[in-house]
Length: 67
Image (cartoon, rainbow, N blue to C red):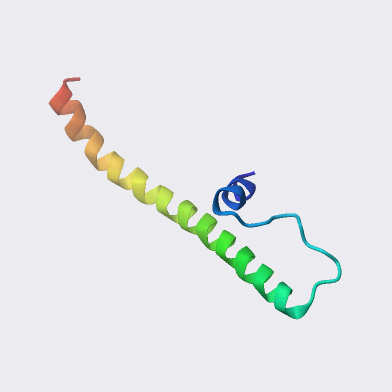
């Protein structure tokens, strides 16, 4: 589901592979699949970083706003 969302957002055609693809078209399709996988991997890798940052800041914010 998430990869299809990224594909629609970034304009990558997903699920439109044909059985008779010339090498030039196949190479472009591989690059698009690689880019889609790269964006997905980046978003998954950044998620824990946000968790770490928020876990350090939540104590400060709770003390500032009052518990």
